[in-house]
Image (tube, rainbow, N blue to C red; front, top):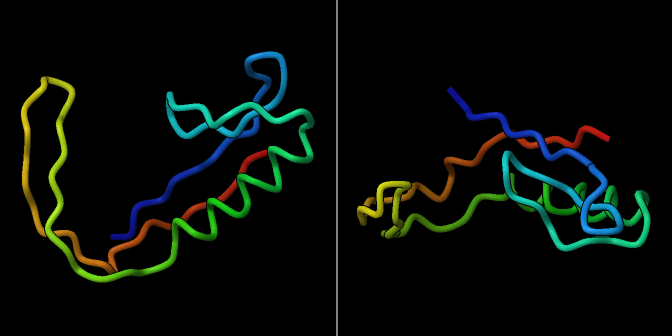
Length: 80
C-alpha cells in the first residue's frame, strides 16, 4: 500500500509556511508563495530515485540502517 502524505498551508513565524506533520518549512511572505512551494515539494516527493542504503535516527535516539527502494514513493498532496 502506498503511503499518503498531506502538506498543509499554515500561518507561521510572521508569515506563511507549508507543514508536514509537526515540521514547518521556512516562512514565506504570502500564502500564495507558500502554496506554490508546497505544490513543488509535493511533486518532487513523488519522484522515484535509485535504490540505496539509508541510515536514520528514531525518536528514541537509536540509529537504523536499511535499504530504501527508490521506487517506493508516497502519494503527496497540498491542503490549502
